[in-house]
Length: 266
Ligand code: LHQ
Image (cartoon, rainbow, N blue to C red):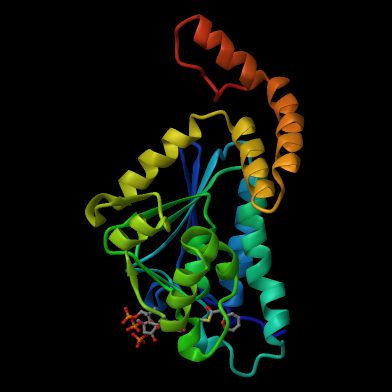
């Protein structure tokens, strides 16, 4: 494969505060367009966050005025990989890692999310947008098929017809419309976006993480299962939750009329 050119600036910035690991895509002069180094590093950082007991919630965001402009179009010429190999090597493991991580992943969409960057924005368990953020299923502008999960996420969020229209016309969706369409859960002012995202993530970090990991697993399985299968999986996962110290702590805190402490070690 073509190796990315070495650069002195890290393509992903990592910071941990109060159990929240923030991973920032850091190619701001290109609206954080993705090259292999960015995608492979982001995937590795997510996997490391999944293994790190100090991390309870992961936030993925972008530096500068963009979230992610999708594939770096300057980086595709002369590539000795097919499109299929490229996706299987870089984008698909990234999206699978986010969806498979046993911790909540928030996408904090600070600016434009285009192409595979839009897919990345949609892949978060919870999507927080700045007021000036936008999403474009831009693929058809360069006569490509939406990838990195967009064909899976978008029709589930907005239905087949609206998804097809957004993909066919590559129209920009602003934050208000994104909220209305269910492409994001919250919109925060640009001026306070970083603080608002951190505050939200810390709220989530205080929740029972083992139970949330099981909930993430159950919801994702349910998206492609029958009701019968969902009922069976719920019964199986409820046993794992019920046997965990978090459940004991939750019930005890309820009886003692105090807030549960899910951050303590079991
Ligand atoms: C960029 C990019 C970019 C490089 C902005 N690359 N430089 C998977 C596997 C295999 C192959 C192909 O693709 C995929 C998946 C995909 O993601 S396909 C889709 C690829 N992405 C695009 O087609 C988006 C292209 N960019 C745009 O349409 C616009 O830049 C958007 C709408 C994102 C933002 O527009 P503006 O806010 O007007 O910003 P701008 O266009 O002025 O961009 C700012 C700079 O960023 C500019 O550089 P310059 O040196 O002129 O200031 C752009 O060239 C650069 N940039 N996107 N994807």
